[in-house]
Length: 421
Image (tube, rainbow, N blue to C red; front, side, top):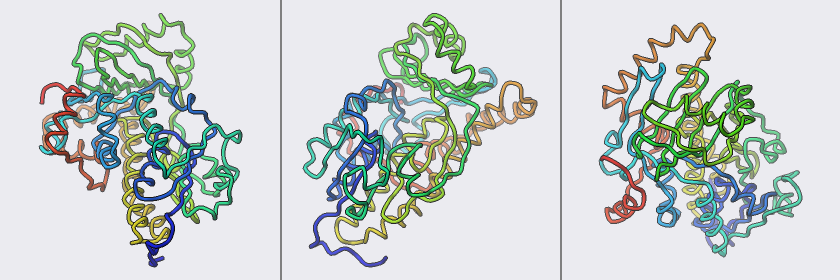
């Protein structure tokens, strides 16, 4: 395992199964590291681009985009927010977090909101332009019966197979890797809206009895809403006529924020916690939601997946330069990603149980004082806010920081407006 790969050998070859945001970014990361990559997915390009939703990107995700040469292309599609308000007990308790709680050399925002289509278009465009990447989209087979099967070759023909085919990964099932976890009695509704009032650079995380509600600003009065509630109520809400749904949503928005219009069809999806019992077997590596998934509380889902890609990129660079072996990459990846993954899953699960124990759960009356105390301490104690915020935007045990030249930071600030700093 300690043997290195001679640089005189041909480039390493990787098969990436799954062409979602995480799979495409992983393929670019491997290509930038000097690998030859094939990306396969049963979905056509138009289907991959068609998803109507937005994501909150953290500082760790921006750092990765910079490393891969993608940040400049996406800058005009990002809307920065420099304030985050956490609210509980029907608005009676809250904590305010600001960009100033981060170290002074970070870009001027807590995070950025990006819509799916521009990000996906940019990733696919860079894959098309890369001579080291081959895209195979729209395969008739819905997924590989074996990791190599999707690429039309046996798995031993690849130095590395990256499974990025989502939480129901067929590749993981073929590997025989089981998962720990559970499904919450909740679903999340995602919908884009236009709002009036509030601050255009403030994001909200409202802890309600039935589940958290996130409001993510997208500029020009638009916002992405991620609304959690019981699975039964989610079915009822998504089946409502537009007027009924609008009235239900308007009733749960933070005080001072008024709903003007619903701009997309509400979509509901179940949520749960899932962790693969191992992240690799043989030459196959589980990446993103194929290895883990959590409640979207705090926007951690995609950022956790992209931190997987950041780790893979660093390790793949060393292998591509002949400094380390493929076996070293596989084992090192699992060790490096374990702490951040487990800590993120446990923290999101703990916060969900603390702040949304359920409308009719008797223990919620006992938890109310603890909720008030937690938010009061967070609101008044700067060192704690800084610690919490850094864990949110960089991950646990991740020492990678997003440091950019001042000229680029100015361009990013102009392209992605933020408020008071």
